[in-house]
Length: 157
Image (cartoon, rainbow, N blue to C red; front, side):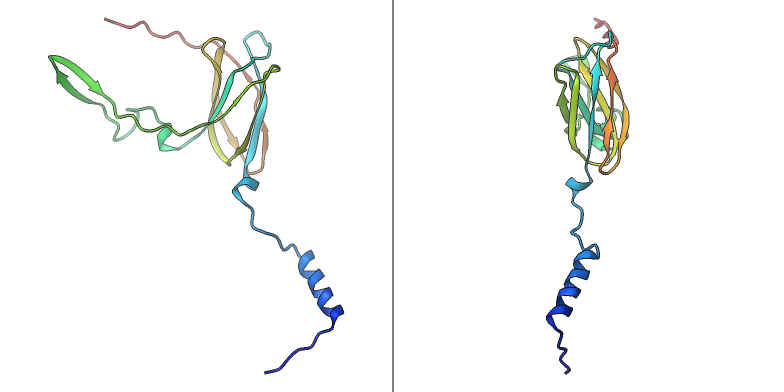
């Protein structure tokens, strides 16, 4: 076996080349996450204060409303002469959330890349809904204007 002898200057040069060649650690999920910021305004154009803004990942099985997809068909049973329709509710995906401040501004950090449904508002001031996409590392600005919520259908007898 041959041994190689190198001098201190050669070792230092080799070390410098390795360090400058782009040697780096792999990116983590936190490095790839983006953020979503924006301003929520009411119908009058004024800041919507203390409203909840939520992002829910699209395509997740749990984002579906119960009874809305294959295998979610409602079942019917009769109890004491009354027909009862039962739905099997699936667990919901937890959404990323933020509250608007006094200026109607919000920020949601650590948003993994992907497609999302978004909502903003509350039952007192109106709602905004839509879809968006967040790229890896993106700082997305998503401003929203609230609109009236549709009136609930009257309950029948």
